[in-house]
Length: 315
Image (cartoon, rainbow, N blue to C red; front, side, top):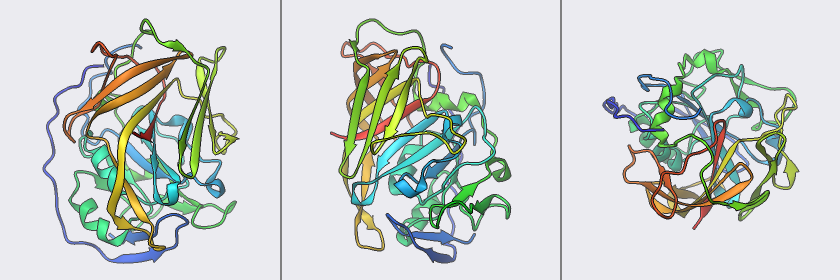
């Protein structure tokens, strides 16, 4: 998939809005008030919806994850994990549980042109960065009144859900060109592999290849992952991207420092597709660039058509 040049929308800045504090298990929520190849053509402007999704035990099973085009797994406070689901092809009726944003998300989302970001809130000192970032930030206080709701089947703060269509997001599959991902037939080489586990300090992701389905079944923290509708989470491609994870200048209410995952730069990766593991090199030269994945000899490494999971593992 070739990455297209995009016209960037100027960054809009503004004063920080009023804040309201809500409890979090990991990180505090301070809520602002206010097939094969290139994708279909599209402007890419505002063409994706990104949703921050809770990923601790009480938050599972999640809703709407199976409809995402890309799922990013990142490390947060106390070594736990959180997900960011990116929707470009279709919008499910609901997504969640929704949780707070991190500094890592702002850098990751700069590859898109003013995406919509749904999240429950953010640490107070991070709010000015979100206000100045090239995203349409729509937490509960700024979204239409019917966009967010609390579910009755689990306790707060793990029960906040969003109705994507109420956010008036307009996904465009062509906007995924910004990721730099390429899709195509299985490349030569690779090593047969049917099982892979990636560990964070206090979380884990395991992917098991199911030949007859052509997908990788997901297990999180030792339990098979499925949606609230009972559908198993099973991407066609899994990327284990080795990155630098360093402390940021932000922390949660308990004083735990928020990690920052550096997604601009270059490094090694493992791409899992078609029951095989491919050694890869990743390169993202600037925040506005997508990430290119190549084989050791520099050949572009295509992904299998379908959902992609990217797990940011500490290098």
